Length: 65
Image (cartoon, rainbow, N blue to C red; front, side):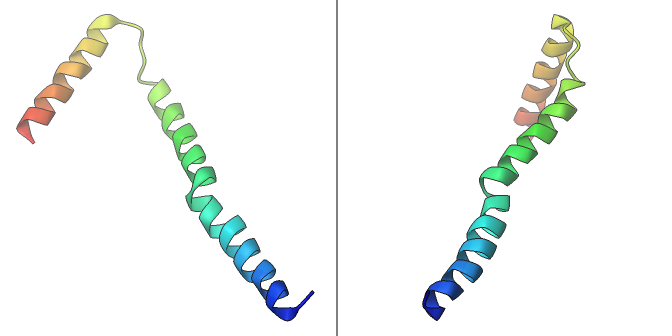
């Protein structure tokens, strides 16, 4: 393998593509979504009045800001 190909594979493919870009891109987004869903799962009570209260509070916040 030529030195240019070896450098391209070891530096750009291994560190950038498999390292940084994958952690920020698909893998990072997947992990973030999983963590957010674990936190928001605790907010679910199953009662309609709780959901209605949160929706009204959200609409009020949107109108104020």
